[in-house]
Each structure stands twice: as structure tokens, then as C-alpha cells.
Image 1 (cartoon, rainbow, N blue to C red):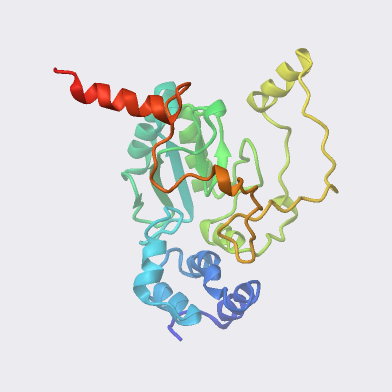
Image 2: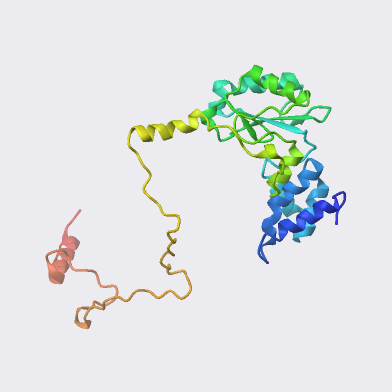
Length: 279
């Protein structure tokens, strides 16, 4: 196996693979990539080889997945990954200003890490929280409705060794610890449980529905989900029986249907008339 992965990581890798049915082990690739990132801080060439050997894949197959998803970092990443949404909604509401402020504060650009290895900055196309715009995340935990000075304060607190409380979600933890959680291993810290009330933008739709008497139809979770009727493509499907027309009424193949309201004789007259007409 490829170095430098620890024995603990190898045991966790076996645990991850064992979650999947026999013959489907390659489905473990996504959590395995998070696992190697939890040890090295990014998905290194050694991490690519490690996953490939465990799952009997080629390095190219593993690299194709690792380069597709932005949560897998291909270069050493800081303890605190700061992502600022600069998509349309967040951008026009102040996300661009927040990102520019952090560039100046940290002295790095997109997907770059500070020389001390503590911070990595990136702009994100969307963080799926438009109702809280502008938003940024630190190791994927949300800080909502950000302003440039607030972003500076968060960076300053992290430099002092503090862990600012996200607007929503659990307490902050370094990127390696977050990657381990994404690999499927729970955070055992007492403060890891999310706390705090839901945000006002999330509750706005619920309140509007209540005001206008809109309710979701009742649903019993115990109701079994029915199996859809088989389609012709499924094995064992038998086409429904059709009613055969009497033999006397059958028409030879290729014979044109009679004209509406005139029968076969009228149809033939119409054809003959068309031949004799001059353009």
C-alpha cells in the first residue's frame, strides 16, 4: 500500500469499504477520498494511489472523480477553508466586497493558501443559501448575511485561536477533522451538535403558508411504496391481449383506407378525377 497513510487510516478505509455490498465496493470512493484528505489535508498523488489500490481501480479513474468535485483539494489546504459565494444573488448583495476584503486581509487569491498554512480562500459559485445572502462558509459551516468587517473579525478570531460560532450549524473544527466527518465518522465533541434557532428567512415560507391556510396533504410514513407496473422492456412482461377483428373485416396489408363518408368506390373516383385534372 502507498505511504504515508497511518494504520488508523487503513483500518478506517476497511470500515468504509465494508459499508457497501459485495461487488459495489467502488461506491466507497467518495468517502475514501475524504478520508485521505483527513490525514494529509488534501488529496495527494499518494492518496489517489491509496484509493485505487483499495478499490482495484486505475489511478486515472480515481483522479477523474477527485478532480470533478471541488471539495477534494489537490494542493495542501489550510486549517480554515474560507469560501465566499460570489454568484449573482450574493455578489450583488455584498459577496464581491466580502471576497475582496478577505483577499486584502489574507494576501491570497482564489484557491490559494497563506504562507503559514492556516487559511485557504476561495470564491464559490453557489453555497445554496440565497435567502441568507451574502454568505460565506468556514470549513463548510455557514456565516450568513456577511459584511466585509464581519469577515475581518472572523479571520482575526481564528488567528487568536478562537472558534467563532457559525450562524447555523455545529461549532467550527479544522478542515482535516471536517474531512473525517465527511468520510462518515462522527465528531465526538460535545459542542459538535448543532445549536441555535432556525433563521428568519427559512421560516418566512412556513409563516406565509400558515397565514393563508396552506397545508401539506397528510402522509403516513408507514405507507408502503407500491411497485410500478412492469414496462415492456422488463423481463417476463407479457403484452396485454388485444381483441382481433373478424376475418371478413380484415384488409390486405398496404391497402389505403376508404375516404371518409364515401367508401372504397368513392375513394377510387376521387383518385381518377385527380389524375385527369390539369394543373
